[in-house]
Length: 202
Image 1 (cartoon, helix red, strand yellow):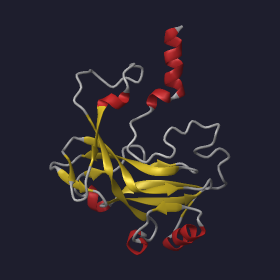
Image 2 (spheres, rainbow, N blue to C red):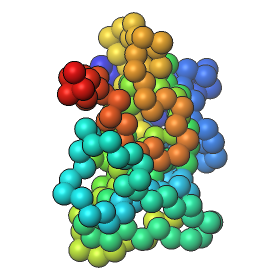
Image 3 (cartoon, helix red, strand yellow):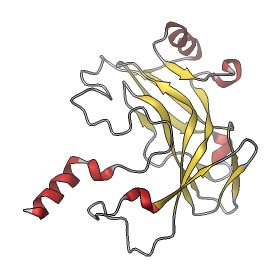
């Protein structure tokens, strides 16, 4: 694999091989080997629920575990120490079938104790949509986040060959394709969870 440089990123954008919309300030957002992405206005946080755990086999809708927030311009989302929230990038991204991408938190956010992804930093070839951010505050102080603030960066890597079944392929279970808001976990749709449910019903 090889990481795209700034000149290759610009070339791929100009040729339409990758899409980042809206990329409103390319001169500032395109870094030497990445593109800075901003945080959107939609957030989700966990409600306080009197249950012992989140169980994928539970019949409850996981959506009911979370509360949605929409921020107006200039309104902060305050994430407190130990809290976890979902958000999305302001920009929507589209990848071809021969590129993968990684989302990394910006160093300036990490130095405040804010992480931008737990495990969802990898973006499959063929993905299109806004990228879900899994935000945690591992610091000691609450931190304010604002819509349009640069919080992460996306890195593009070439593959040894195009994917035969990229994300979004009809034969692939692409649960988060085309998302434009923070999407609650769809773990209940995982085949091993569905298999367990069906087994229990027999």
